[in-house]
Image 1 (cartoon, rainbow, N blue to C red):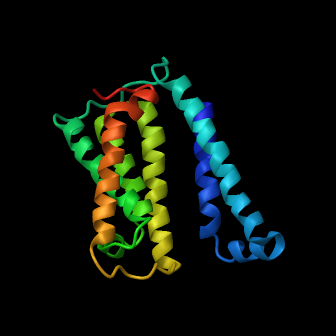
Image 2: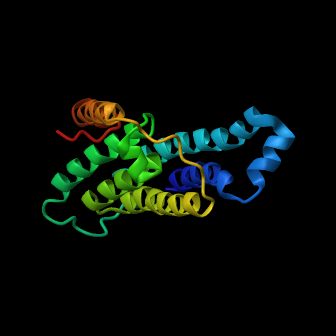
Image 3: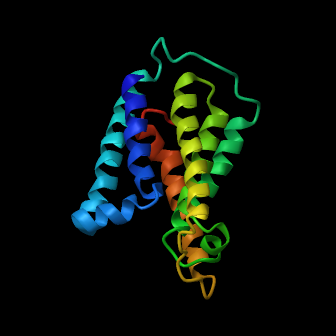
Amino acid sequence: MVWLILGLIFFIGGHLIPSVPGLRDKLIARFGLNGYAGFVALPSLIGMILIVVGTSAFRGAPGDIKLWTPPAGARHLSFVLMFIAFVLFAAANFPSKIRDAVKHPQVTALAVWALAHLISNGDLLALLLFGGLLLFAIFDRISLAVRRVPLRAPATGFGGDIKAIVVGAILWIATVFWLHGLAGAPLL
């Protein structure tokens, strides 16, 4: 559990750097854009590694207690939410009406992803991992709005939406049938 919590602290901490007023500009002025990127990327990468190690070690351990029983249909709802999360994640990379409407689809995708997993799991591991990332995503989305982070140029057609849906669907299918199993938790 310690590695998981430490991983969350590093991952979220690295991603919180841009939300501290003036810190981004100070780090860029002192270390350049690449140095600043390192201040965000390095703790995030270390955090991801620790999260994977911590999750693997904690899954099924005696300390991973059952906290609640997921409601009937939670697994099916999670499959739908995950499809939405993958489309949102893909939409962050294309000029699309989806991106224009959601404003920050990658952060929203993280929130939907975390919520989907929190709904369908009822153990301490899920509460720590997905609950922590859901709280971070909510905070980050609010922070982006408060800081008025500029949005990319609006979409001019629906080509980006089609790309986002197709790429999201491919990622969703690959995850359901293959990638989730590689993470040690096969879905089918």
